[in-house]
Picture 1 (cartoon, helix red, strand yellow):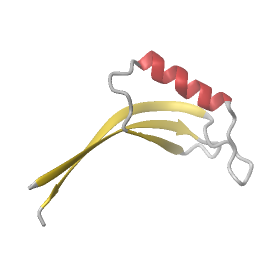
Picture 2: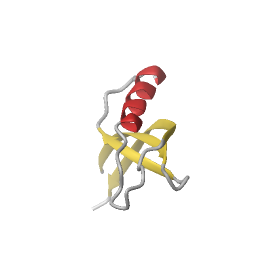
Picture 3: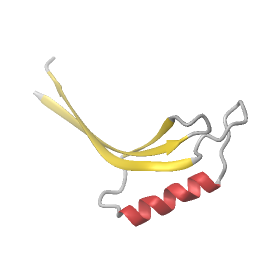
Length: 75
């Protein structure tokens, strides 16, 4: 059975509508500290990226987590 493992870093932001927006980084550098991730996320917020409706996509930071997915192919 062949296994495929993928790891992502999911950055969670609050958008202008008050809902969560995730930004996923594939194959991230592992072992990043909270401080490093927070600083990067703050830079994203300060970039003031807007949607096509003109609303802020990343208004504030909510959290970050590594996620791992393992797929075991049967056939």
